Image (tube, rainbow, N blue to C red):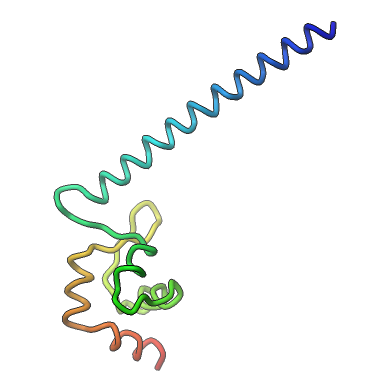
Length: 107
């Protein structure tokens, strides 16, 4: 009886591992597809974290979310996430300037 319980447990473990491997493969494929969408056709999209690093003064995420909330910075949504088109951000930095956005949000 003990041997059959061990065999059943081993079989359950193998099925669980197989399930996890398949899940990781599907997630990996999804991440690759999203990355391809973000970098397709020479268009460069940035996440919130990437944008915080990209802007010269490295604003906090909270500041960036405030700019989005008040329409101070160009943004888009993809599958519920905020994304930013690098070319639009570059134009925003050149024409509007980051400091103008900070001052108007805080005013």
